[in-house]
Image (cartoon, rainbow, N blue to C red; front, side, top):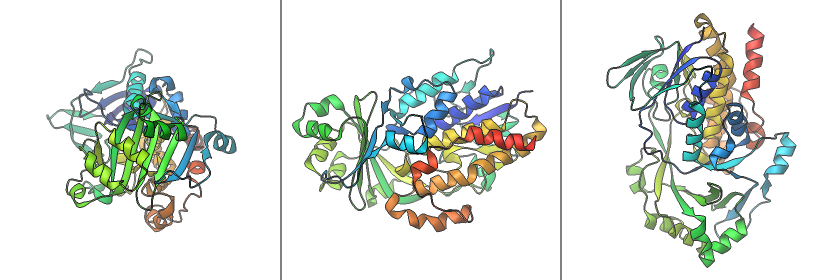
Length: 414
């Protein structure tokens, strides 16, 4: 008999979990607080370990309006190349990875997942209930209560409600507090056509191209730029130490308005071409890079956490969506179509075994850039004893295949 699954949250990870579990034949209901009326966000990396999963789910990558990422280059703040470019094709060959690394607008990725989730399988559809704000989750009962008093009961609850998760409280006994990291990120988009009409920014585009990720870095500040939406927009992220004004309003939201003047002041010693690009920003957002510790376990009773609800990711490794998709794929992989309710505890333990150390390692590495990675080892070992830091994050993440690993774990217990 199919399981009745409740998914809390219809972000990228929640929709991914709904799709993956629906493919396994389970009945899936998604509870989403928003109305899907005004999805927002900037661009996002979709690494090979993520595109591999999307294709398995039947999500057409063309729906992402993608730009294929061919290289990663590191420059100083004035545009001098600091290292040998990382060429995607060469890394894919070394790692024996055939899947694409694409750059897309977050809204396009979300829309692609919504389209995939809308597909019926054997006349069954995923039931997405919008404007459904979750008040509480009971892990032992598999019960979700909404703010309007409605109650839902499932064989399993998937907590996919992000860094501000209500679901994690069911495991911790209380909601884990959000901690400011001391860093903030300006986010903005610039039309490529607008940049091409300006001599300074046109020359910048000619230098870097429109087929990769470029990081312009000083000791503690970085401007990261890459194209999205089929090369029509340039995504820009300015990561920097928070100032007092930013810290006073820190709430880890993507929606906070940013100041163009503060953006220019923060990166005022960068090259004039980069500053001219910043001046073209039409809608600057300011994202406080807040986080919290991972849950001590991703499962309890009938509850499984995925994505940022389990292990909040910061942007430094570009793996947030990919790890949420891996969680979703792994969870569906252990909850096979023939899973009986009495087997749930054992199957969820398999999910935790498969995902905990890997995703917490990526989470810890996402908190910093490579220059400060050694500081993460002691922190990582608080949660994963005897863990070691990955020597290379591409090598650690790109070949990951949780679907295959889940199948192996399930086969071992049958």
